[in-house]
Length: 358
Image (cartoon, rainbow, N blue to C red; front, side):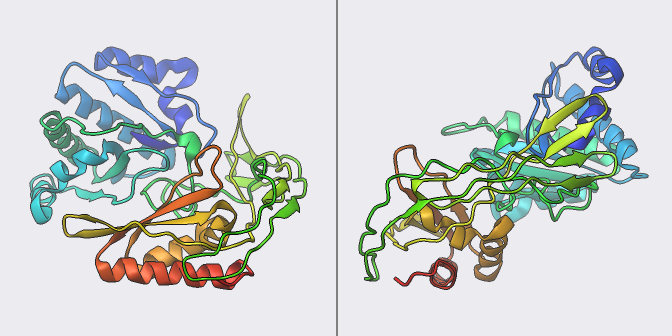
C-alpha cells in the first residue's frame, strides 16, 4: 500500500503501539520503510486473504481519523503491471463487475510508479466497502502471479512529473502541500561535446561549461503543511555541473525526514531517434534525446510533460539516463494518432524552450 508520508506516524502509533497491535491481530509481518519522499510504502504478509483485507480496512480507518474523513476513505494498492489486466478484465468487464458487486470506486492507473513495474489500484468507499473490494482483488491477484521483471516502487524516486496516481502536488485529498522545494544536487555533467545532427537535420551545438551552486536547506512543518524550500542548484550540463541545493526538510515531533527533487533547468540541443514497436492495439514509439534537452520537455515541476500527456492522450514515460550515457529514452504509447501528436508536441516543446532549433 502507498500512504502519504505525513500519516505514517499515525499508522505506526505512539511507541509503535498501532503497528504492534495490527501484527498481533492479523498475524501479519508489516514493514513501513523510511522514505525521503512524500510517500511511504506499507508491505504486509498475512496467512489468509481475509486477514490481508481486514488489515487494509484498519489502515483506512487510521487514515480517516488522521485526515478527519468521516466515512469515505481511500487506499492505494501497488500492483505489478502484468497483473493490472487481471483486475480490469477484457474491455473493463472485471473492474465493472467489481464496482457493481462491492460498491467501491476503483481506478487502475495506466502509468507505472517512477522507476518501477508497479501500478496503483485505488479503492475508494467506506471501510466495509474497501475491505470487501480489497479481498476480491487480492484473491484475483493470487491466481495471476507477476510476469516479467519486477522492480518494486521505491518512494525515494517520487517524481511529480509522473501521473501514476500517487500523492502528487496537485492531490489535495490528503492535505499535502509540498510548497517550495529545495533542489537535488546538480548532476556531474559530462565534458562539453558537439551535438550530433538530429533526425530532422540541424547544427552542432557545443556543451555548456558549468552550472551554478544551489542554495541551502528549507524546512517543512508537517502540522502546518507549509514548506520553505532551499534554493535549487544550477542544472547546466557540460564540463562541470553545479552542485544543487539541499532539499527541504520534513519536521515533525522529534525527528526529521528530508526529501529532494530535481529542479534543474535544462537548455541544450535536440535529437530524435525512433524505434516503433507494435503491442496489440497500441502503438509504441521510443524517442532518444540528449539528457540536456529533458528539461525543455519536462518543464518546471513537470508542467510541460503533464500538458503534453493531456493534449495528446498518449502515455509518455521519460527514462532516467543510463550511467555513462548522455541520452535519455522517451517511450510513447497510444494509438497511432496519439503517438504522432505526442511526438509533434515534444518536438514543439524542444523548439520553444531549449533555445535551439532542430
